[in-house]
Image 1 (cartoon, rainbow, N blue to C red):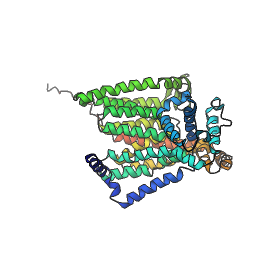
Image 2 (image 1 turned 30 degrees about the vertical axis):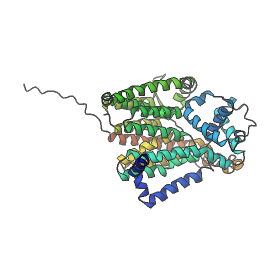
Image 3 (image 1 turned 90 degrees about the vertical axis):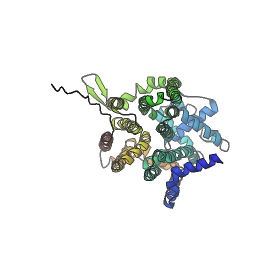
Image 4 (image 1 turned 180 degrees about the horizontal axis):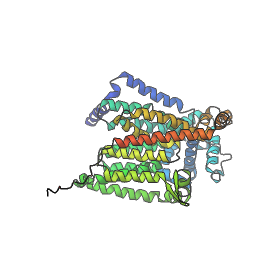
Length: 445
């Protein structure tokens, strides 16, 4: 009974802003209904591909190399597919004809073949809904976690509504149906535990986030520096001291666990594909190249190490700068942008003027979907009528009848980058940095 009373007291303390006003309850129900409505009728090829790989694991124990870096997501997919197979056999999720040699195809060919196989099965809307259901649970987890970072009721309310109706959240998690929300959930949970000075648990959740998707790697160095900056407070308490050393042991174990995946990615993707396909670069002389993202990211990291204090506020601000540099200076997949949204929420609460800037950024974020043609526009609605929708002319070809599509995409992307860099400038302006001026004793002579 005492435990129940404590739980109710905690809920009242942190979520009373929802239940005090009927309007917020109605908005919560509306936000959930929007999600439930969108879930069955849209999908990106990543959704069927992720679950297809997991279904192979369940049935045959096969683990393709690229599958290793998403172990946590795979375990979650594994758990839900294991539940679903009780009433919908795994063999009926995909039309197995033509998929025997699926891993000999190139990646895009493979994803389209798996999607076509998935959409040809009966009860497709129910199946899509079930595949997205885990993402809804993690999305609600972030929704109710964000208000916990704030004490003032108006800040809690804003954080709640910002996530509930955020178009990036709705598109990435429920229209695309990508697993990025799992990674974001564990990142935010890690930050919450660090906010509460639970360093060991925070590091553990960071490790889980990294094992969910690679985006968490970009905040990991900032968290490590944050823990190091707080070592003075940690050393004063034996429990915290053990927590501190355990945190770094966990990171070493994580590296060992990830080594097979890292070795594969370093040999086949990061070295051969990423620098030339994803990093924006500038040329020096005949042969030397500077990767702009690496340059700016390391610069931000060094600024955090040398000039920042040990506050949680500067942790999230520098982490946001690191993530924004990724989106300003790299070619990225739109679903990755979800990782920025919770930190943008913190930034807007810190400076309300950033809401207008973020709204403008989102407009051009959606505009650059044109870069992927039908894949991220028309084909998202393929479940409604696959035969018709998947055979429509590419939207880029249609637009090219009026404008040069490539120039249009480049303009959209350039404006998005400009807005993102200005966003970084606004965050830098708000930083509370240490005063590192040298004081000289004046010679009175």
